[in-house]
Amino acid sequence: MKLDSIFSGKIRVKLLTKLLLNPASKVYLRGLERELGVSSNTVRLELNKLNDMHLIQVQSDPDNSKVKHYSVNIQHPMFSSLRSIIMQFVGLDQIIEQVIDKLGNVEKVYLTGDLAEGKDSPFVDLVLIGDVDKNYLYQLIQKAEELIPKKIRVAVYSKEEQHSFLENFSGPYFHLLN
Image 1 (cartoon, rainbow, N blue to C red):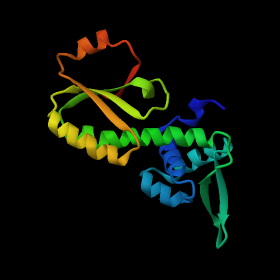
Image 2: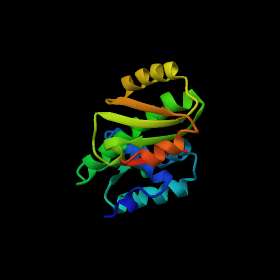
Image 3: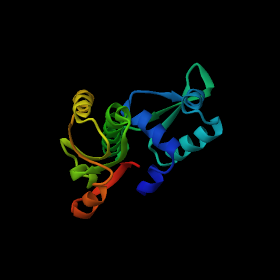
């Protein structure tokens, strides 16, 4: 099974995130259609693909055989790994939502360090490019750290210093926000 077949498409990632974050949850086609804001056919196609990969299970509702509910297949050999990936990315989403979006003057964000290499780490290392109120930034980081099980380390560069960072940084990094 190729990873690009698992993570291709925004809808599929949203479905996997929903199911992997709460493995006990069961979802229904119509509910997903409303929640994701896409057609039932789009959701059905993605659910069928996930089912073909055996990542999810389909069961008929005992009270109404026409209604199917879907749940993650916790017996799948990649369940733990995929859940770990989703949890890490949800942590990053929390950082973006709780910190970066509230700062307002951030132009770019780079993830660096072990997480940028795909390794687990107790730290989330970020480089922010923009005009940032550092006192407010540290207040937001403190709140975000309460939501995720990682410490957040941040380096801040002005827009003018961005080129210096890119030229002199030797470790791995990737864009979280452009």
